[in-house]
Image 1 (tube, rainbow, N blue to C red):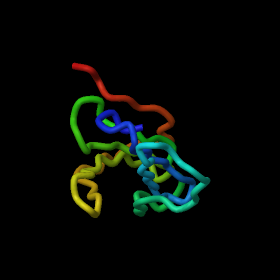
Image 2: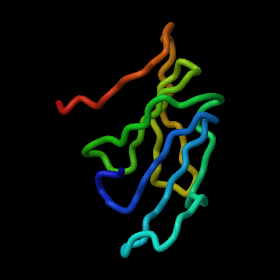
Image 3: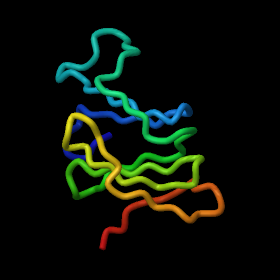
Image 4: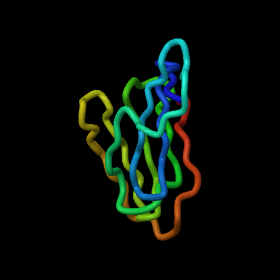
Length: 99
């Protein structure tokens, strides 16, 4: 869930896609398989997706391709502003430092 809006949900998927759902204020009245927005974040499985706890519209992903990407979500088309490479093993955990 997005820390700045409790109606926004991001899901990291095995196909390398990020899917975003905007939940209506009165909740879902029926099941939905259609996300509000979808974009290709990595070429393969995404293991982690984390919103920044204090910076609005900043998201990180880590995936099977051994990269961590920092995404700017403020535009209609999210952009990977920073791509961190050099890992030699899979990245299964990450978090933001509160400092």
